[in-house]
Image 1 (cartoon, protein in one colour):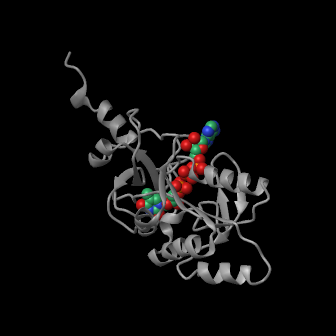
Image 2: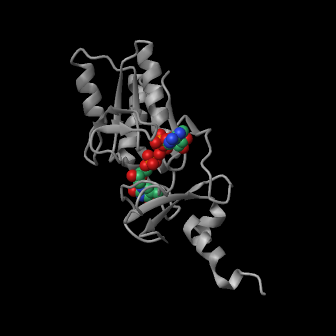
Image 3: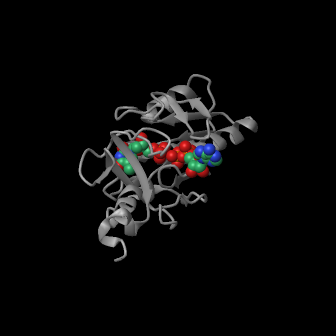
Length: 217
Ligand SMILES: Nc1ncnc2c1ncn2[C@@H]1O[C@H](COP(=O)(O)OP(=O)(O)O)[C@@H](O)[C@H]1O
Ligand SMILES: Cc1cn([C@H]2C[C@H](O)[C@@H](COP(=O)(O)O)O2)c(=O)[nH]c1=O
């Protein structure tokens, strides 16, 4: 019996790396798979890991028909043993329903990877449906850290360095990196406490530098 598995973690927790490793391990045992993604930072039709690996993938947009694609392949002498699906938070409810049907009716293992919640701390559509349907929801073992050292559980969005809580749900982007110029829209992983207080690393540093908190002479 095939399973629908959802691997989830914050941004930058190693999900795409794991997706590529899962694909590699199955291929190494002569299993035939298909790799999907949606709106990867590196462009259309690619899964890219910050560790430097990337593989080409089938791009999933809102109209992509998983069932039609898989049935077409199977009826044209192709074999599919498993599916790897990255950035699954962006998939629609109906696409996740179809992935569950593919696992159940066609006996194809489905491995999905994605972030649970958006910058407002709300579940993404695809992730919500995966939590509802998956046989297993697994949290990535490599923890990402908030600037305070606690485990990061939430994804903050910044605009010109300032944390925001309103805007479009989907804006492709990367986590901020002190070695790169400040992006117009960036992301930072935070613990819940600091997400609630809108305290990013930069805001905490600015507060620490403020004369209000310097000791009196
Ligand atoms: N220079 C580096 N050295 C070691 N590990 C790194 C380096 N850069 C990135 N990583 C690892 O890669 C992870 C991000 O992997 P990636 O698959 O791109 O994440 P995700 O898909 O979850 O956003 C980081 O959490 C870190 O563990
Ligand atoms: C929180 C949040 C993220 N996104 C985007 C930003 C990135 O392009 C992806 C996540 O990629 P990763 O491989 O997990 O680093 O999602 C978004 O569109 N909206 C959000 O609220």
